[in-house]
Length: 312
Image 1 (tube, rainbow, N blue to C red):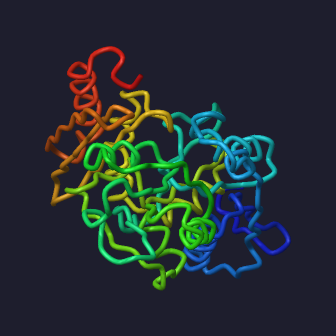
Image 2: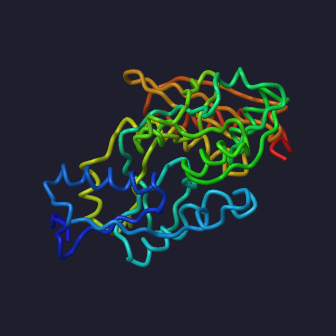
Image 3: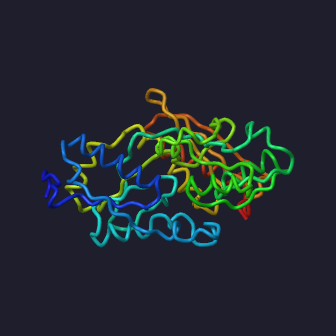
């Protein structure tokens, strides 16, 4: 199969969740593959797969199973041959892939910052005492309570449109989204303020799109290699090694960000108690090639400082 192009009669099947953002990411992947290989749109088929994380909207993620909720059904489709590649938001991805699958292609990373969204005026610091803020992210909840323990933080799930509707219905006065998602959806009309990483460190791999395939599929590997962004891969190698050593999941408040400067990499990491009462952070620099080791060592150091029961 190596060297053969996908064709309208045998298209590359791109698996994705069905949310507007997930579809935008699948369309970006298709557009990059079309441009890289001179293929028509008909050489690709976007296959929408319903995942548990989207189907169950009335409970927090930690109650129904964590990160695999957004990937499990898609990976099963990859393994049974129903799709050829899978497009994922990397911040939703578990650090280990099922046997037979590999995640080694990343598109150029978007803006990593969180977006503070409110229909009123002012920023995070301007929220009145005791204001209600909605978020489904345990990391954002913990970071917010660490800065403003007076706030009332409520569960807030759903796509961008659903969350904006909840704000208009006064379920909360503010919420958070990923700036990358707003950019990819072209939603410049959403009233948001980006929050700098120095103020609120983002989720590991936030703003990055990853593409997963079967390890045995040489044709998919060849096609994907042409659109892989090396610097994004280098940054995520450090961040995800940090996450893996912490055994991170949706049930654990963890933040991390790697940045490149020449042949150097700077990694910042943070772990928090779920109620925001304690924040442990660290940063380190080294050669890009040492990124995964830097991530692992940083995680081990934070775990030693945290002691048992920190995430309880």
